[in-house]
Image 1 (cartoon, rainbow, N blue to C red):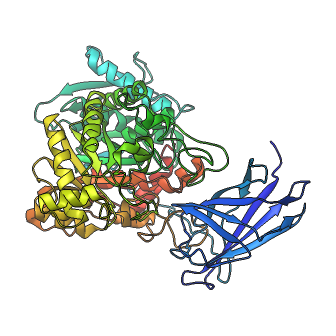
Image 2: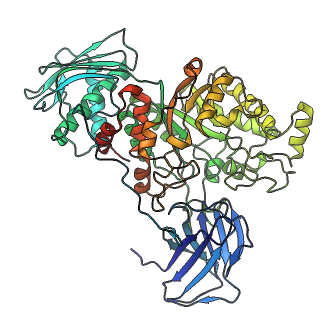
Image 3: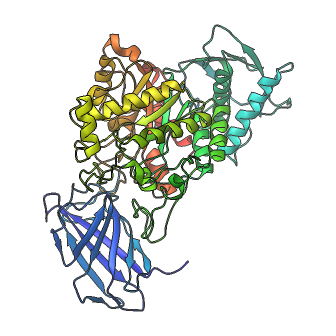
Length: 639
């Protein structure tokens, strides 16, 4: 491990500007003096007033990328430090992850040198450590199950079978199902004792399988007698869920015998509360290798979640190989000082890239399908399209003034232009390849956070608006998305989007599913307009939100604090009028990756809230119990 040559320390003070100020201190830990350099860092807390700097010159900003220079003639000797302050921030800092995420120096000879970055300190107020995320917990019935089943009437035994195995005369399909869940268990718990055996064992219990036409496709029923276990199921998904329940029961009883037991008698009658039980992952801000994607899908299957919403494109990168447009993954994924896109969100001196080849996508989709998880792909359009526009400049109106509008994340001119004919040729070819890769009936097209004022400086857009008698950004967005919906319908697919798809007149409600993310009331409004809805409000189900108000708790804060207790207790359909509840199709966790710079941050923020949402998606309201959940949640597998 090489020693650190330069380190950037930072603090936030409540005073010094409308939203406080940063104090940065660069330490020269090398053996050489430093002069003629520039310092760049990435931070979600952005500088919006370049003049509000002291002892530094603000050079440029692109979204979260910032660059500064020291005073002219300044030299930093070995062992010395340079301190400067920055006010004029776009918001106040609330957590230790609100400061610089990465930094590097550009030296006088144009070389780039990485700079180590410390967490943001709080000055002028108390920096509290985060509280415990879970109480000790308590179980009434001593069974390790997550999510908790719809109905359970079982008696705990004193011992447990060494293994469960298929009864004699089990079908090949039933035996394969045991093998599949056994493989899932071993992937999630490599050191765990196998809950199943395909061969009979005198120390175990047989599983008697029975398919029943009166059970739903995801429903199952378990009956325990002490001698055998009867598993009735409606279809393959229900059989998998029943076997997963058995694996959880026996593993919990084996490894935590003082708290959990295996049933000696009784029944579990189970089926999901909602049909859409989703988890979203943003792979644009940070890239996750294929192995991580497959493990996350394994975790979803363990929690009986059935939708993996794969957010494949955004401003920061286009991650899906499209063979018709190879520059999307040749240029549209590269971030670095000399790359097509500048560093963002934790990138620094070293260039970064990463995308999923079509062969990798096929493998991931097949892996998910084997676990009854549907992969719903998302390309985020028309906004959040910086990467696509960098890769394919012909998507832009060349007459449009640069930086004529900015997205909420600070990206200039980041929306596909509805008046550029190539936009539709591009999307037709992208969708042609997507429908071959993804068998899902749904394709998610984003539709969120298009900046008000987008396209208003585009002569092509102004001409189109005049011809079509369209007024304003959102009416033009509606015009665009209606064409996108026609493309998807022609390919036998349904449009899914974020709640802003309904802006400006929206699109046809038939065959459209919208995700309510801005706040819970949006979902009710969408349902009232006739849209089917998935509830994923940031205030409860965004897993990048901080889990406590304490400064030392990592995460975002725009939607407030989402403690595990709040996420668990939140009832998505709680305020839906009875006549609209049929429009609510389910719930979904969202994993946005701005703050996930490490596996540690990922696991800290995602768990235990992901299993909490899984229980909200599966377990009837009257069966939920926070203290029971808190006792079982520590058993969760993690990434």
